[in-house]
Length: 184
Image 1 (tube, rainbow, N blue to C red):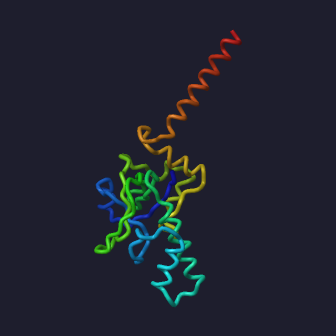
Image 2 (tube, rainbow, N blue to C red):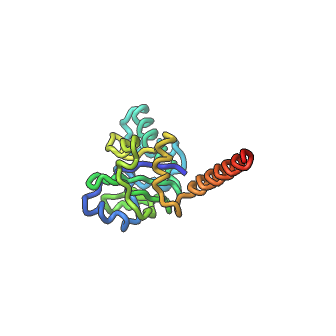
Image 3 (cartoon, one colour):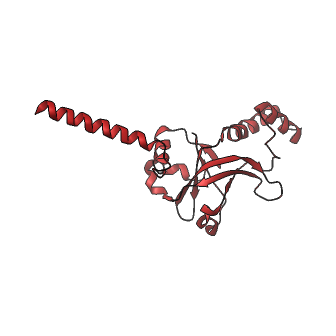
């Protein structure tokens, strides 16, 4: 499971109703539908057609920026969406495939299901800087401690990693009981 931070251009009233949304908007700009692409080379060919005058290095940068996000975002990934107005973070699970809606301004979409609670950014401690707007509107969270901080904010009924914590607690309690029996 990959964890992504994805900044959305939401108005305050849209932030309040974020749980009603069935998708997130991917920051892929004005490129056409990507659903037919299956490799970085196909992505490169698409950019070569769209921007025939670009230097090869520029095309490579475009592919390097877009392809890892498009190909890396998978079902069951977690997306953290910072809400600027309320200073909270909405967490969602990717539930479907990429889709393209060329008719509207939000063209590149990913289906999601939102987890019920919003978390204040301050509860992420030193990792709250992840949610500050950067030059990248979408990025993968790779730092282990930051991934844990985000995963820990998932409700336990959804958090498939929570059960491992309870197993560790049970082993710890059994070890303490065993030590007490040996001492006594």
